Each structure stands twice: as structure tokens, then as C-alpha cells.
Image (cartoon, rainbow, N blue to C red):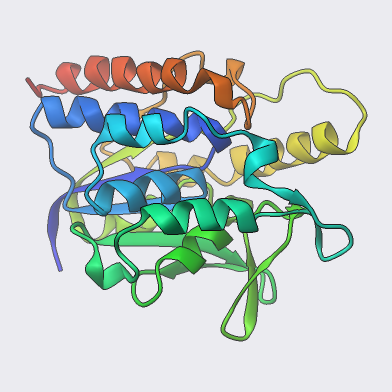
Length: 252
């Protein structure tokens, strides 16, 4: 099936709120994605938008959350934390239970931990693939779907442009994944994040080249993956950058 405009949303923790800012700019410029592809944080924002939520509503939804509220310590069950509290949080807000119930077609990428390949979900149960796509290995417990375990889609494909490229005339890509790895301390969280930074950066390059329009909010890397108290600042970075890029491309 051919779509005029497709939107690809990268992973990037709370920096993914920038995706909602981009979506608000797109709405104001009357740019409507006909299909969305998302990984990790991008899968969350993509699912909520495809479910009918407005961009500002999505950002405000995450204003009062914190890492502690959305996770629980869960050693030694395959990860340091369970993501179950966040799954309940998101499950209560998603009106659509299946991909087929969404207002906009959606593709979610998660990494099959058994086969070592990225897989794209676009039908059936919606919540499970979204949560799997967000489950950073070691930090979070892998998610079981049917007979396989899945972890963060960003592990193998942090920028899911290729999943919709052939089906779209125009692809807008929003990348909020790390380009640089910041200073770090030798502790489990910082070492894990630095490792993921390098992997995510490496596997986005090919997909960046596939975009017709690439939006990478400036100064987004000043925010940590779970810095939830800066939600509206992050939202505004996405909005401002999208306005700048899209207007330069002739949208008004």
C-alpha cells in the first residue's frame, strides 16, 4: 500500500517527548502522517498519537511520571527493574487494544532477543510490542511475546525509517537518539547507558540516509534518558526544530 507521508520516530528515552513537539508543528502546518513507525520512546508517542491523542496531551501525560513510579526493582528476573508499572500506566491510556483499532497505521520495532534480529509488529495486540520495544536489556526484564523474548528495538534499529521507506512517497524522520556519549561515572547505570549510546548511534546511520526530511532537535542531548522533570522543555525543542526544518522545506 502506498502512503503520501510516513513518519519515523526514533528511540531516546524521555527525549522522545520531542516527537510530540514535532507532531504539533506538523499539525499546525497541516502535515498529516498516513503511517507511523516507532522504536522505544518513538513507539510510545507513535501509539498514543495514532490512538487519537493530541501532541500536547501526550506531553502533559508524562509531566508527572518518574523512573521510580514507572518501574520496580526486580532482581534477578532478567533485569534490574520491572517495567510492569509503566505497562499498566500506558495500558490504561491506550483506547486501542489492537493495531487494527488505531486511527493511523502503526509499525513498532522490537529486538528479538532469541534470534538477534529486529522484528516489526503491525497487527494484533498493541501494548505488548510497545512495552517490548522500550525494554532496555539489563535494566528491564525482557518481554515475552508468543514463544520469544523481546527487548528494546533500539538495540538493533533505533531509527525505523526502513520499515516504511518503500511504502511512502515522503518520509519524515525524527531522530532523538544519542549522537554523542556524555561524561560518565563508573556505575552500572552510566556504563549501561554509554554502551547503548554507542550501539544506537551506530545503527541509525543507514536509516538517516533514507529520510526525505530529517529532524534532529538541537541540544536534545543535554537531557538524560529519564530526566522526566524537563518534559515541556523537551517538547518545545522538538516543536521549534520541526518548524524550522519543515518551513525550510516549503511547508507553511
